[in-house]
Amino acid sequence: EVQLVESGGGLVQPGGSLRLSCAASGFTFSSYWMSWVRQAPGKGLEWVANIKQDGSEKYYVDSVKGRFTISRDNAKNSLYLQMNSLRAEDTAVYYCARGYSSGWVDYWGQGTLVTVSS
Amino acid sequence: DIQMTQSPSSLSASVGDRVTITCRASQGISNSLAWYQQKPGKAPKLLLYAASRLESGVPSRFSGSGSGTDYTLTISSLQPEDFATYYCQQYYSTPPTFGQGTKLEIK
Image (cartoon, rainbow over all chains, first blue to last red; front, side, top):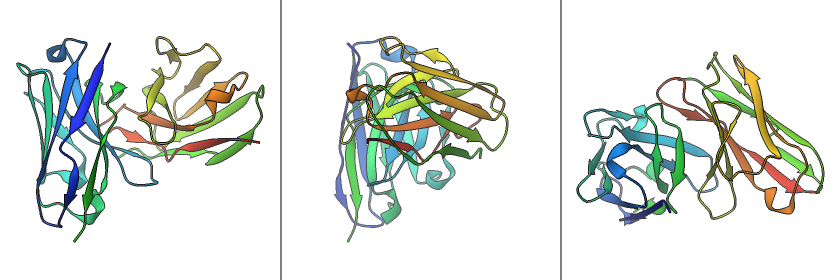
């Protein structure tokens, strides 16, 4: 059974940093692109970033370029999102998702809430 | 970025009804479209990809069609567990973008 478990969310002040993690199991992690997708409270879905199987390609939505970094450790079956210079508008539930190069995803984690507020 | 517009934004229907949700892209996306279902407090779930391919385990009452810029999700006979919010997503170009969602409520 595919499982994706996010952690690392919480309350952070504007301008602060946070690192999200996603532990994957139930599939060959190193064979899949992985993505982060977020959802602001009461709002729709927004794709944030994705990363190729070997980490050699990474793509970001414009609003997070230069502030967020996606990475992975295939030996640990883990996906990460380093978030710097956080803004109030980054407040959202962040989902880790298994996917494909084009950005569509087939399995989602349960999400972790990031709140940016003073 | 490609903009995805869903209609309607909300819909009231009854168990057993046939329901159609539309998704329009701001440019052609060559069937590079996925549909997701999300229930309150839960992660989204993939229903269809490549516009019309049913994800494994998804009931056959869900179907998708379309081409070019216009796509539809149809639920042939609504079941109680189908009341949720539905999102389309284009993955023809980066960044992949979602529609704003269609909330399906019980009449």
